Each structure stands twice: as structure tokens, then as C-alpha cells.
Image 1 (tube, rainbow, N blue to C red):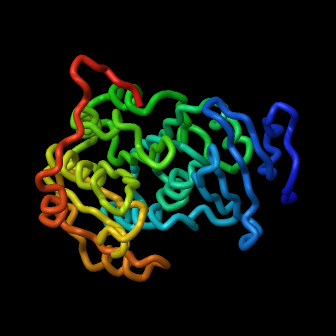
Image 2: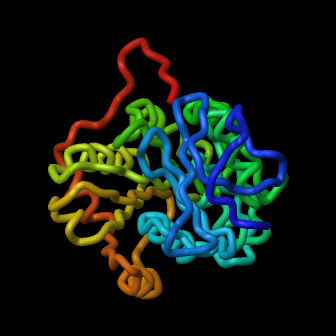
Length: 289
């Protein structure tokens, strides 16, 4: 496949199997922009409405450019062997970077990616070499509605990576939704969220408190400047009914990352969220996210 740097079809859709091409593409929720990575001949950056959303390396699905995805991957590797038949649900699709990684790292995994934007899902399928069903299905729908429709104990891993601008829509942060995610998880499963926040960390504290109120065990992963409230960035918060203790292999993986990160244990996460108001659904409201 040649590397196409410019040009799109008039309607913004790539020809079937044509691969990525730089340009701006209309989607259901606004505009997607695909940019070639000048530092990597097989890399592509996807922006949604001007905000960086995903990075794909066509030559290496195991390469994750965004540090928070590498932190997620480290936590997943600490829990499951690569032979596991991992049942994963991704809330928020983008370019399916994390799903593509898991398909390579866990060949027996079965994954569903929930993406609200049907046009974006079509484009991503056309641009990138994604595994096909049953290995990877893209389901167009609202993340909360899809999650609440799933059977109890039907997933081992739920990753929430949904953003509207800089923050996650509130309906996907609430106690009620977190309980729904917990119901869908099998025993020993992990609910993992990408929490974006500003230096005051007010949102992250509420997220930590909400997740800790549902799950017996929690961890949080981020780089030290983020944990100290020195910048805007991402914190990974995870919950489970099983111990998520940061073992030596996870700590080593996080510390040797290009952006070294620390892992807070359950006690630290609970102290961090202590006193923060839980996110709750508005009375009488059945929100979608």
C-alpha cells in the first residue's frame, strides 16, 4: 500500500481497502482530520474536531504513542496472560488503537468497540487494517445505552475512553453508570477509565471517589507531575472486585516507560477521593452517553 498524504473522496469516504489519506473528513459529530506522522513513516494521527484523539502505527499494532494507553496496557498485562480469551468492551472508538493493540497482544481476545459516530466507524474501518468479527466488532451506539443492555458477567475488561472536548460526558461518570459497568464485568474483571483533568484535579477526585464506592479494589496510574496537580493531563483509574495490587512487574513497566508513571494503591486512591462528591444521575433522568 502506498502512503497517501493528500486527498479524499468528495463525500469524505475512503474507497474500500484504500488505506489512510491525509485530509479533513465530515463525520456525524463534526470533523475528523487524518495527519501523517512525519516522525514515523507508518504512523497516523487522528484528530476529532481539532483535538488529538488517536494514533495508529500501521506497521506495529503493539506500538502505542499515547502514554496513557501504554499505562493501560501495562495494567492489563499484569492481570492476564497473553493466551487469555479476554472479553473486552471499549467505550469510545476513535481509531481503535487500544483494540488493535489487544488484538495483537491477546490473539484469542474477543472485543467490541462502541462508537457513537457511525461515519467515523466507517472511515476507520476503511483506513486501518483492523481485525474483523468476531475478533473485533465496532458497534455504533451510545456507550451508556450499550453497556446497560449487556448481560451480567459478560466482559472481563471494560475500558472507558470517551471525551466530548477535554472531559468525559457526565452520564458516563456517575455512580449509576459505574454500577452498571460493574454488573457487566465477570468476577476478577477490571473497569478502567481514562480521566482527563486540569491541575486542580477536582474531576479526578470525584471519579476516584465514585469508582471506589462501587469496587472493592482500585488503583490509579499517572506521571508524578499530573498526580501532584501541576498540569492538565490524564489519570488512569481502575476498579475491580479482585486485588489490583501494583506488583514489581507493573511498577517496572511503568517506570521504564517513555513517560514514567506511578501507580497508587487502593488506600492512596481512597485518600485522594476522600470527601469528594460522587457523580450521580440527575433525579428522574435516564441519560445517555
